[in-house]
Image 1 (spheres, rainbow, N blue to C red):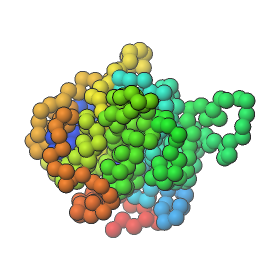
Image 2 (cartoon, rainbow, N blue to C red; image 1 turned 180 degrees about the vertical axis):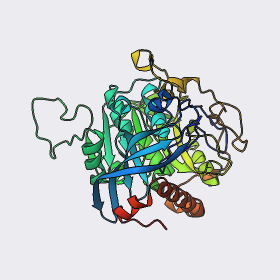
Image 3 (cartoon, one colour; image 1 turned 90 degrees about the vertical axis):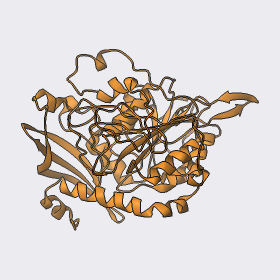
Length: 425
């Protein structure tokens, strides 16, 4: 098994983890390069492949947006015994998305973290509509749309939307403003609309008359964690204004109970939140505590086994007022595929919570780790009320940013950064 995290947003192959204060949940990935798609490598017999940096690359397009530079780069990454062609979207020196160049594997998530978020499609409840804040290259919303869940997307960067549409097959549908009245009530964007706007502004200024989403996904990491999304204020906003009483919110948390027409209703929605950081840090403990102050059930999946070197990792939180469980469909999608194909989707139902304290070391063969959903919040002081509450964790946040940037730089030839005009020191 290759436990190599390729770059920035988390090219991890290996395990899922749950957060610190309670219990971890981990699931083992059988694929060599990504949690879902290493079919190309595996078919070449690379059972002990060692990831290497890319030796060849091509810059397809670059867009300058404010102080940031967005670049689409193709790269041939070599392993012992073979190589694989990939396409990445870079935001300066951070990878915010990617896909396999080979059409045979283009439907597979290149990063296990994305596969974990895609698995929300198989939550054991109906999903009529979803919303994702943060686009990347569209890996998750495109998957949800293709599997029957109309998914709206809110993305702060017009450049990201442009490049995702032109180079990664993302369907960018924009609702005319103002939308003309018509007898035809069909949605102009049946698969989901795209809105270019700051996600926090959108949540505050476009509150629907009634909660309208079954699933809300938040994935806004672009080289740093956007801390306001991890506060209880944002969690309560999602819970009370955006998620249906029986909805699912992908990124953070959901409502425990509410009243609809005077009748008590248990909310079964799920929030999923992606965070990049050190799983044994007080910051992750605070995020978990914050989620637990809003939602009864919190689970967190880590993309790789706990590193003895203390590497930061993608931590994907699922939070809900009801137990977070999955029901995997049967059919040709998951049958007769090479090893590693749809690995997360086909194994996530087998990940069982383990009563292991976060402090206990785990390896790549550990079972999935999960938070104790019924454990009351032990330390209310850890609840993150505002961005100011993150000041105490500034050193940890900065260390994560530095580590991820340096790791990203190391994965490509120095000539690429010279061509893009980005410093390597």
